[in-house]
Length: 134
Image 1 (cartoon, rainbow, N blue to C red):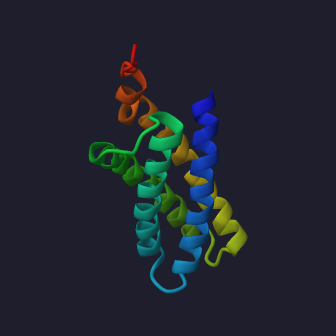
Image 2 (spheres, helix red, strand yellow; image 1 turned 30 degrees about the horizontal axis):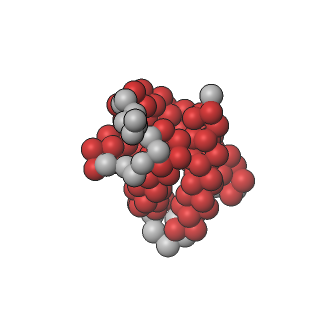
């Protein structure tokens, strides 16, 4: 439960910052490109934070970053599909509606990421024996 709370706090903070960044960047470039760029940057940051504070207690490895990137691709697909569906249903959604849809999709994707990170990416780090000096 503690790791889930840490995941939510760290991931939620990064997610809120990412949401604001996507909104701002989308005024300059197409939304899909803004979402892709922000997803990459926020995934690297979140994976490092989760490695240090949520799951492993150490810096992330390249392998963990790459595995985490796979779950980020799925998160990107979920948020992109949600936004595409919104724009298909509402011709000119307001910022609050768009943020609500994006954050809801990101929360769903975040739950999936938690499971992948806990059960796959950082599983070995959690079960590795601790070396002690005796």
